[in-house]
Image (cartoon, rainbow, N blue to C red; front, side, top):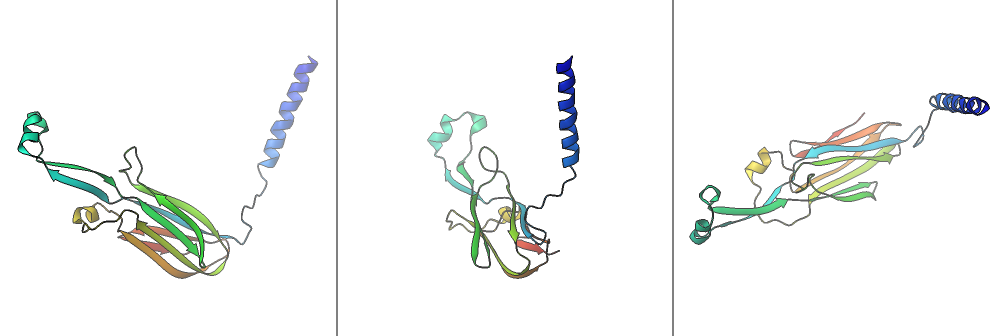
Length: 176
């Protein structure tokens, strides 16, 4: 009996502490800190090597699998470099999602900023070299250009969020 009473008191005390602490204000970066938020979804450029099959190779295949051209490949990877006021903040190599890395690239990053005038540089460029011209099908699918650069000075308000997204083959900057 005493054991159950003690256990009930402990449970009540823990519940009261949890309820009392749920209203506490927590400041992570200070009241004045602002954020640079990178948020976009982009389709990586497709990298393919194609060759024509010989008549002998085609003859070995069942009729329903015969294709005159054989293509192998994958998707490009991209280097994302973020610099604020000349100081490197982040550098990552990003690949498409999925097992074969052929899905879209999702970018969602946040970097703290001090309020005031800040020079923001963002470079998003393809890692693999390419001499192939950009395919119009890639552009229609919304593929990322081989290199995107944003180099600008922004006035960052206290506790503001500077949003950088991607659309129409260019970076889009949104200020609060």
